[in-house]
Length: 227
Length: 115
Image (cartoon, rainbow over all chains, first blue to last red; front, side, top):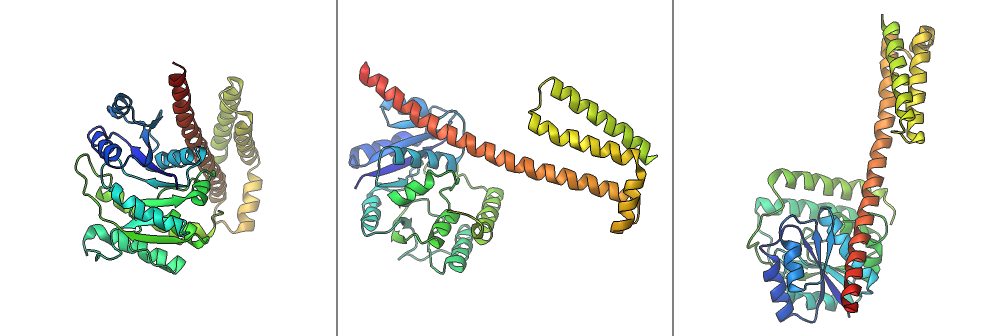
């Protein structure tokens, strides 16, 4: 199976080299593409210098845009599966093969979840995670233990959906939508690194806005949406 | 006083739209809305009877309220259509950039291969 690692990178000059060196030396079997999302720092320069495989947005589109470019790339070059792999070093490549195995078992989306066998902590950070999980349960009847995990592997059928002009993002509402449309979703226990450099994207106000957007999408908009 | 003021304002709107169309700062299909808008305003200001009639018919307490309601309604429609248009533009730009980024990487690859 040919899997593509989509590595969105926006101003990741501090992280990208470390992540890529680990990937290239320890996991050379994986194809990857870095989507440089209009970075204003040295991200592109570093990619060129080291000969990394990358594509560059002329302007910043945000994570959704970067992910969609990656999906289009996977689509064009005939990959069987594609996974979002964060450029800040949060995701560990050793788990990818476990996720791939489930795609081969016939699942459409495989989520690298932090809470299949591990218990979810009762921290304020996990509150959003719980609420989204509940909304997914309400609308699909199925349990997703870690809906906000960014580590999701999609099969070819899903890749094809992402290149349609539907603006699906790599977010839990998309997963919920596809589940309602009959996609088979599986979760696999993984462990994730904390961010080692750079700034987390989610501040408090952003988290609230994010939650609001995801919840309206899951609870209201999806009923009207066409596949 | 309302209707003379309305007349002057609507006249200005019409003239302003015409100037913009002349200077080609407007796509024709976008200008149509504003031309229709200013015509409605001119008609309403020239014939206060129309507003009075509809205000009475629809149960508005004052004629002015009917005019405000017409304004709000027309502007809401415009805002809604603009919002749709912005979304579509955003989507088109996104798709354009996705394609552009991959095409560019591909052509640079081919160049390297030739060298």
